[in-house]
Image (tube, rainbow, N blue to C red):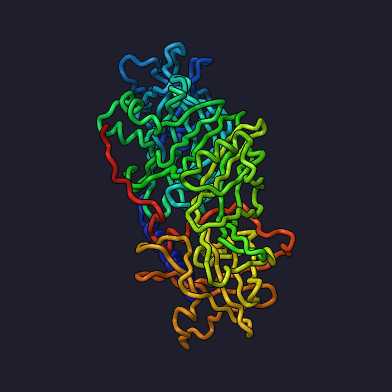
Length: 587
């Protein structure tokens, strides 16, 4: 109803405005115009590109009255020493409405990247018109940038700053034909950026990310505006190298003292493998937050590709089997270019020794692991261990490794830990992380529903949130209780957030009686609350929908988009898990 009323008032206002304009126009004197009425079109381009294969370009000049031949004086304003030559008049033939002002130039004198501001003016005001432009100003020159086609860009810059997963997509890349090894991405964070929604970026101009690969062993990115504004202000990003340059360090000094901050160009791929080697900021600053936090930013030039040798591990917990053997269980994520991988449970003291033995093929306790498939590593003593995963390429060379810390504990004299049975696969729809009003939902696909082997009312969904699990009790009346104090893996303004259901959180307050988590027809509905001692972030109407039977697989691992941008920006207003940069700026 409010929208209808508002729209009606707008129409009424527009009608009044039109009436007022009409009355005013009726009283405004009409200026009589005589003569040919020569003018420049308002549609002429602001920039004219020159070419060494030609020696002139034309500016169209138009008149209203085309009767008779006409010569019109023109004034062309050029800087001293210009490569341009312009006539002092243009001529219309009888009946001709548009003629061309031809400006010549010396193609051999073109300097790429140089542009000259030129103004052309009708020299006789008696032949002009008050209803058209009597002057036209533009820039003429030859660009130093030539398109190479589409590059493959893996972004860990914006994504890294906001804690989202790195994402790979195509974006146009240009090379500088004046300076060897200088490239730039065209609008890398515009419409092509998968995390953007309409309105998230500035469309009024082009934005460029320049890559200085003039020294292939020391590649860096000068600070640049991204064009993105997700509510924190316009975002800028730059190599850490830029900050040292801004604080009176030379490039040679930075290379000698901080070589790890640079990227490399090798085999057509530019990579920046050092984590936190970039900085990001807002409203004109670029040096407020760390970026490239996982060191995964890379650009594959056209004809090349980014090899994916990433290794990850999702820890599901420690368990005991029916024989009394304790083990840690988890799911590996292996980059698409990893052909095979092995895993072992090691301590800090044995890590390097076991790694060397795996490479030599002499560690019999190592197990073969496959992307997305759960595996177990047994242990017999309480302690802090590392899950070592080593990936290999098609030639058998080690290409990716991960040592993920886990705590292995034997609960002597106590009940064994829960043994989970995988039941179904489903998709989890987050409400708190989404914008349901615009039907924009964040979805984690292919999550697994587990049931406690000893307590069939006890369930968990994994992985959930930011690499955590969501445990809950399915009551006899099909209502659901989410025990309080479960971590989400997400940091709020005052520390880590936990999750529970609205009934548990409010102590079954009657005013929330209609918000009871429940199960019906294959859909689990959760009224979740994210909270800590200081903050709470509303009630989320989340749902988990079963999509298929998963009895033959213990777990399913599917690449995820990462935590939702709307959650971090609209709900949290913080840059999760990333501290502000406060390091040294001199060497």
